[in-house]
Amino acid sequence: MADMDRTDLLSLYRQMLLIRRFEEKSAEMYALAKIAGFLHLYIGEEAIAVGAIAALRSDDYVISAYRDHGHCLARGSDPGKVMAELFGKATGLCNGKGGSMHLVDLVHRFMGGYAIVGGHIPLATGLAFATKYQKLDLVTVCFFGEGAVPSGQAHEAFNLAALWKLPVIFICENNRYGMGTPVQRAVALYENVAEAARSYGIPAECVDGMDVLAVRSLMRTVVEQVRAGQGPFFIEAMTYRFMGHSMADPSHGHYRTKDEVEEHRKRDPLLLLKETILTKQLCSEADFKPVEQEVNDLVAAAVKFADESPFPDLATLHHDVMAEE
Image (cartoon, rainbow, N blue to C red):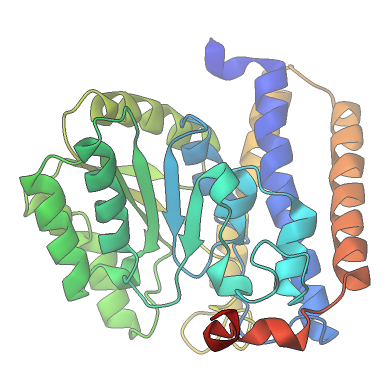
């Protein structure tokens, strides 16, 4: 089977491990006051970004919400530049002016992370409209959490995407606790979130968001359909973030117990893929050591690069139009 290729599976494992170690180091740097502002970690959700983006071409578009580090790294962005952006340094992806929630990498067609809940979903629809209007053979993928689904702009975007049969894939990363919602509302969203898309005639399917192979397999099929002109598609990826909503939130907060978090950690996406590889006897435990060392070195180098980079010059904080005239 193509999904059981040793090199391929190790590559997926490496990508997820890179995101995991990057996020862990980001939390450490936040605690040391190297990173300021808000910081939303992707720990536990790595299989969605890696599996979905693995099914795309390099010229397809990707857009995300504020929990965007994982998508940016999975798209191929330089970890050093991403970390430098988190540090607010001039060498960052956005010259230190975007920060954690607003990563953008046009070279890799990562069209940004956006802090307004659900605010980027119409932007994804706009990207898809533009590519269809220009008769380009491209797909746009939009990642967001279940907390974005009740927003009016999300429904407007779903409606137009369906009406115009746009080449966009909406991926809801359902981590079960919608931002700013009480438990009861979050559970209701968990049970019905895909209906928001189906109500506009958009086909929808649920996938195990902790299983990178399941995500990639579904995405390969969906991407082919959407690229062929069959219109938008909605994927609900069931996942679980192991950390709090942000670094301002306790690891399990007031809305879930430590036991609940530990129970979900048994289905860690990294652990699941590693077990698959070992069970299929494609690798031994020793084969993972070089991968882990490479990732650790890469993240350490990213921190060093960010730490040694300069802050933006104060003169770059504004653009003097009058001076140019």
